[in-house]
Amino acid sequence: MSTGTHGTGARFGGLATQIAALELITADGTPVRCAPDENPELFAAARVGLGALGVLTTVTLRCEPAFVLAARERPEPLDDVLAGFHERAEKTDHFEFYWFPYGRNALVKSNTRLPGDTTTRPLSALRRFVDYTVMENAAFGTLCRLGRAVPRLVPALGSVASAALSAREYSDVSHRVFATHRAVRFVESEYAVPREAVLDVLAELRTLVSRLRHPVAFPVEVRVAAADDVWLSTAHGRDSAYIAVHQYVGMPYREYFTGFARIAASVGGRPHWGKMHDLDAAALRALYPRFDDFRRLRAEVDPGGVFGNPYLDRVLGPVDG
Ligand SMILES: Cc1cc2nc3c(=O)[nH]c(=O)nc-3n(C[C@H](O)[C@H](O)[C@H](O)COP(=O)(O)OP(=O)(O)OC[C@H]3O[C@@H](n4cnc5c(N)ncnc54)[C@H](O)[C@@H]3O)c2cc1C
Image (cartoon, rainbow, N blue to C red; front, side):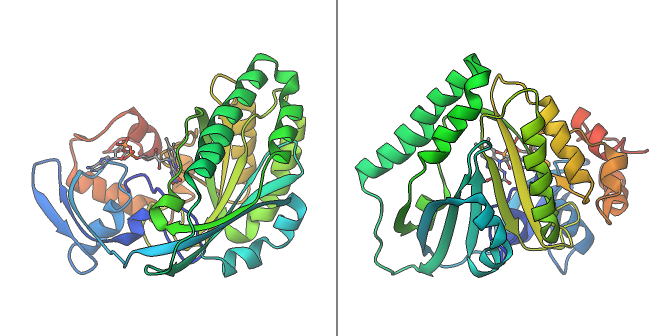
């Protein structure tokens, strides 16, 4: 919650938006209860607080009845996916896609909510093993290791991975669809951009990838989320698209990530607080209308900087500064 973790869905906000109330232990040891009608400013700040305001000890979540997800995953030409992006994002409960650089296809995932008593058609144990353990982790990991050893093979390997994508449809209880096991290690940077800018950003990203000195072994992931009112939420005040760039661990990524950051900056992109980025307090202040309010509250509840650390110094500035 404290770093703005999110999933995908144009009608849904990230984890922090599901908090109905919370208790925070501030720097002097005082427990403070926050809710929309109780310390509302601290409530708006502490839901994505970066750990800077205190220790969350209790969180009351807005729950909902268990539900089933109908999952449809299939490779489609990237250009088709982009042409229908906004319509699909609006019409599908949980829409996302992965684009393998150097491939022409994107893997589109569309998850639709169904009542909890719907009869499910889960993947068989064998299909789960083949898809997740073999294809998404073991085989993909092997391609990545090969690409890291012989970088000039990466574009061809990316095309192989893209071509090997297969379609599947199944339904299962939500957590068995939402949560996936990731055994292949990677580095990642992600920016939230205004939803209406997503196609321009992706067009520039495609150009950037084609010009990089070092190839990209990992897919780009694109998701969406609804605007919210949490002060430091990456979706604060605007419907957002999330674009995440990755690179296989041990391969060069600086040129790729900084190039992408420059593209995202041109549309006011906000970096994910829990992923790699280089922005400092001055740059972030321009991206968040309530940034100064957050700093003011921080100075009130932690005047001595008890919860400070080098990352917070960079992204928020010193407590008294
Ligand atoms: C494999 C993988 C998949 C991921 N997938 C997604 C994804 O789909 N969507 C997405 O948005 N992000 C994703 N992330 C990134 C994820 O959001 C961040 O890594 C996130 O910060 C993880 O939180 P944590 O609680 O596990 O880590 P922690 O390091 O424990 O917590 C993160 C920060 O939260 C603060 N914090 C922790 N506990 C408290 C507390 N009790 N009170 C106050 N502050 C506290 C601290 O400042 C801490 O530094 C993924 C990361 C990985 C490794």
